[in-house]
Amino acid sequence: MKKQTKKAIKQTAFLAIGIVLVMVCISLIVDKGQWSDPAINSEVLKHKPLVEKYAEEYQIASYVDILLAMMMQESGGRGTDPMQSSESYCGKIGCIDNPELSIKQGVFYFSETLKDAGYDLELAIQSYNFGRGFINYVQETSGQYSQEVAIAFSKEMYENAPDKSIYSCLREEAKQYDACYGDIYYVKSVMGYVDRIREQ
Image (cartoon, rainbow, N blue to C red):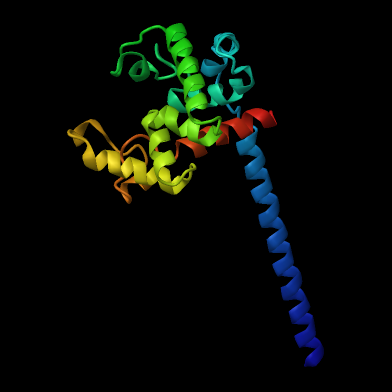
């Protein structure tokens, strides 16, 4: 009886180990499949020469990967305003209808944002999405970028907006915080693209 019990325990242990190994293999295959997808699409890549040109002009040539990742997050490289830089150019959405002007303005605006943020990359990236007022907010409150301060800023801006109807929560997760101004996870998304660009 004892031998049978020991044998059953061994068989169960081997079976459990086998299941774990199979699960690990499956997860590795799935991860590999996800990471083999291109980090950025061909629509963004076709704009790379212009991004490089204006990054050089505005003395942020080492930030090309960041700018491409931001374009991927903003528009996937599609449309006439791939950097979604109309608001920083003319104060309203949709005034840019030329991809080169969009890229020039987007790169310029990011270069200014970097300077204002003291070259704090995460703060500069989030400020590209929220606007440069976010830099002042951070400096006056926490002193440095964090996910929590991004949520607090978004919530405050949304609460104080004279017309809330012009905003919609871009992400389901933002609804729980009532943080519907901008994209509270913009930094996380952009840096995710950057990591994948650099792994290619």
